[in-house]
Length: 152
Image (cartoon, rainbow, N blue to C red; front, side):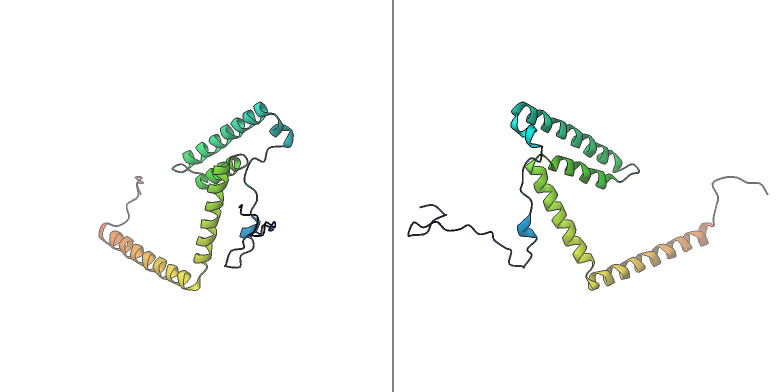
């Protein structure tokens, strides 16, 4: 007996499960798989070469993002852009990108919580006061010395 029939042998309609949270957007996620044009998917050698090209371009973008992490530039943004390029062809990249989007959305929701915002503002203020006191003690103790020599 398969999952699509009940005990009487009648075919039962498949239903999509909606999460218990009431979030209907999660049920309408796009289908995983290649988004290559149909004429490319029809020919196996052309599709493989298309996937290799997408992988190389995505790898170049992700590599540039990794280089930008210690250097000036939007490193993480470029890395996620490379992941989005890979996600046009590869299921694993689509799953990683979907997980990342979910985690970023959850973090943004937590950051908007009034209690968390209040706590972050208090911690930032305390940190700035500590830094200001330390800078004041340093200036009081050693003074301000310019790195260049200017004769008056």
